[in-house]
Image (tube, rainbow, N blue to C red; front, top):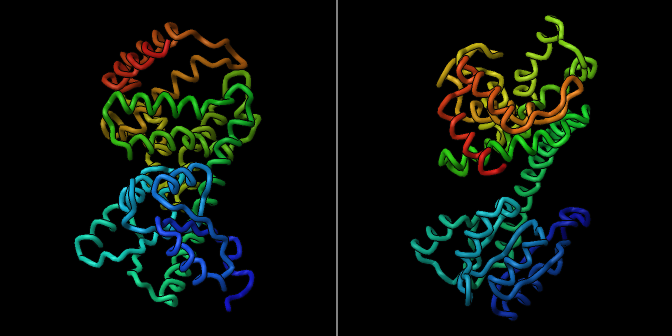
Length: 323
């Protein structure tokens, strides 16, 4: 008998079109401290996952409607469910079927008729892995909360990160970037200024012009943000965007003075969206500009070499579609 507190809150979803098979699995796990839910076909399972978040799914391979392979594919393409471990319970034992399952995103297999002790051991191992993943997800959420805490310091920047992310993703789609690139833009938009958590409020919220010394402090925020996010491997693709979002196409930016295409494309996109949102948002020292005035300023800045001209021209089409 396992420790009574171990995995007490672990939630398992059993998906099988045979009520008898579900009953057998339930009975097999009866001495374990798991919370069990069930679905009798693929559609029912996907409906359950719209609101339910099990820690592990035991999934039959062959079912009417969407089979186990298709259900797995849909689970893996949903950001809210893609990390849930899936054990496929199947009478199929051919190499091609196993390969098909792995390609769809299955984590492990149990062959019918299954060995009870093997089933328990595999569930136990995958729940432990899920626990580690949950810890990483929690750490990531803390960092995103820090980014939003930066926004909360100044009422004038409220909603800035979300708007910036939206503009950046729209622009990324116009540039035909991949879904992985769009995720970098989404996360980079939210996290780009997280390093400002280390900058004193008196500098961040200063109404007048910053002194040279104050501006040098502000210029440290991309490097600080990179250091905050670096420990998490899941955020590794976003680190260049955080570090380089203040670089300028003509090399006049910071912290490293990168120039032209030395600046990663995600950072070039974020910097343009960042500037536009700043210009069209109220600030203590000026009123928000309208779309045309903001674009006019940015066109002049592009002629001076601040923004990637090709990306900026495409950004203007995104703006025109919105306003």
